[in-house]
Amino acid sequence: MSKTFQFWSPSLLLGLAIVGLFAAMAIFPGLFSSQDPAGLRLEHRLSAPSAANWFGTNGVGVDVYSRVVYGARTTLATIVIVLGIAILVGVSIGSVSGYLGGWIDGLLMRVADVFLAFPPLILALATNAVLGRGLQQTMFAVAFLWWPAYARLVRSQILAVRKLEFVESARAIGANEFRIVGRHVLPNVLDPVIVRASLDAGFVALTAASLSFLGLGAQPPTPEWGRMVAEGQKFLLDQWWVATFPGIALFVLVIGFNLIGESLSGRMQSGLHVGIAEETEGR
Amino acid sequence: MMGRYVARRLLLMIPVLLGVSILAFYVSQLLPGDPARAAAGRLATPEQLEAVRERLGLDQPVPVQYGLYIGRLLQGDLGTSLSSKQEVAQELRIFFPATLELLLATMVLTVVLGITIGVRAATSRGGWVDRAFLGFSYLGVGMPVFFLALLLQLVFAGWLRILPIAGRLSLETVPPPALTGLYTFDALFAGQWATLMDAGRHLVLPALTLSIAGISEIGRITRSAMLNALDQDYVRTARAKGLSERAVWLRHALPNAMLPTTTVIGLQVAFLLGGTVLIENIFSWGGLGTYAWKGIFRLDIPVIMGITLVSTTAYLFVNLGVDLLYTKLDPRIRYE
Image (cartoon, rainbow over all chains, first blue to last red; front, side, top):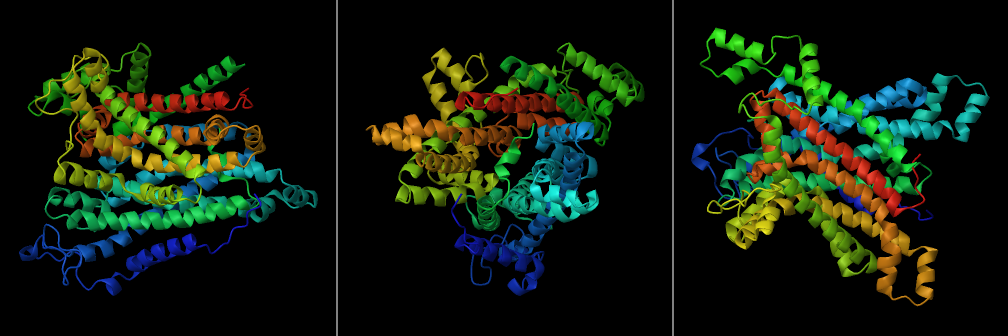
């Protein structure tokens, strides 16, 4: 791997620009749209894209553009919360497992196997049935499915890093175990976690939107892209804009995240770290 | 040695399946509503309800119910659906082939197109095929499946009217005599060409929708693995001894590039096993996904358990299959 990677590659910049734009929409939606994303105007229902309504209006006359803008918040919040929980749980369990080893490691990894093997949609359906339909329930279900991937990644990183020389030397000069983990092991483990998270972000967005599309996520009138595509499904033949614009927004955001994720993982693989691909083999 | 490895892996499936079944059983207990009420119907008197509860063992503590379920399961009995009163195993035999047919069609498309495109892109590195494919692959991985499904329905069924919008067969087509439950195979065995065509046409849109992301991923991984292989000494040797470029690609580079590709194919199968609910929903497919959907909303615990166990088992075997394939693809890999 002698190839040197330029950190600020064009694809990374493009990805950051896309995600940055959607992040700005999520934080300051008012800057992008002056219309109410929940303002019913039945007399304007299903009007085609125009100067007043860039993306047209939906079945109850709400401006599709403003719903797309406000939908950015729903999707980005979902990504942050799902990955936040998954990383927190995954890193804790993975560190304990990798560091302690022995039967605890065996037990925790079997638990991770159970969650990896569990059919995802059954879990999502059941979570919604148990806790009621809604965005939070769906986030919870998705996070529930995502932590094992991080647990295994962190575990394999810890196993690899523990044996490296600088950890041995830290131990040799008498650093205690907490200091070794905090100062030497974790920082090296977190890089791959960040890369993995950037690769996962788009996938989390797709999963959450799919569940919302099935009616299991955000409930109206919360603007959510997957749900909006589902609402536009019945008008698809004649009023294509209702479903198409939210679909495109999701599509573009996912591509933005993928551009960032791939630039970062390309950079990491060219560096000293243990390849992320090696993590897939964990049994 | 290999036999011992397989035996160990099969043994390791037991705790995972037990864990999954406990989790699924526990989650089913949490579902709001009363399964006895769902089974007995809305008009049941309190006495009838009590009788149903007793007959189904729902009056027992949950661990006892779980124990009874596992006991029956070990005798090959998946129980009876609370809502349809049919045996779950019987119903799975109806719904599973529909999903299997869709998955097979998807995987054939994914693997054939993914590898072909990946090899073409690698061998014409930097050319227009390569660049067009890289562009396509970005779009393919980012595309929400449900959105793609709607777009394909809009274009091919709505505007061009050349493919059916949903379902497994046209209304006027009689299903072929059931042998495998896969309509295309059954029609082929029965020699019903019109039915075969009809079933095939219905498969195109859902299978295409499900395979776009896989084609992108498998194409990309094949491309980079091929590029890596084409850089190696043995390829230089093969060229030096005068083999045609085609022979170098297909006989020397591709077999070595298949290892990473196989990993991704395995991940795709596992992902598809869980991901068909959405597509079955949009294309009214009537397979396992539809069955799961109904089972959950009817609080049909035996159905939920049956589907969970069947799809988990399939997932575990796919993983094992991929690991065993590695040894075929790379004889240096040995499992102890």
